[in-house]
Image 1 (tube, one colour):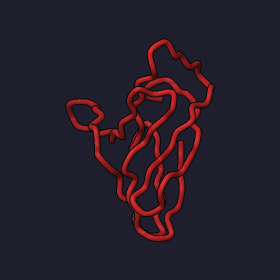
Image 2 (tube, helix red, strand yellow):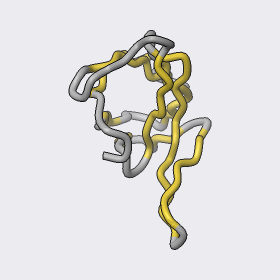
Image 3 (cartoon, one colour):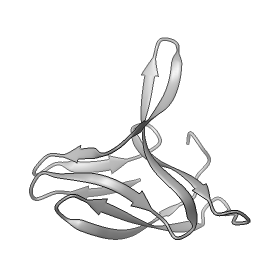
Image 4 (cartoon, rainbow, N blue to C red):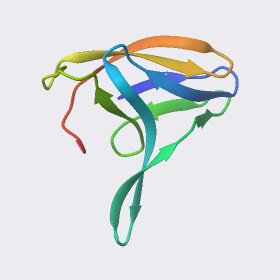
Length: 99
């Protein structure tokens, strides 16, 4: 899980990684017919609010570069790009999809 508190309203616009061909923001949706993940173009963060990313809410779906493999527990570097705050570098731990 990645989290942070915004001092003023902001918006997460994109996520990139030097290890990924593609990284997209997705939002977990539960309905009577099952669960799904919808691609979203951004995520708003209210002033004084917190952005929490987990497999049960907002997450990043990643396609690693060809030939790259990561094991559970390894970290992957990411850059989160915000409308007002600019770029923020972070790293996340590899987990099983859906966990």
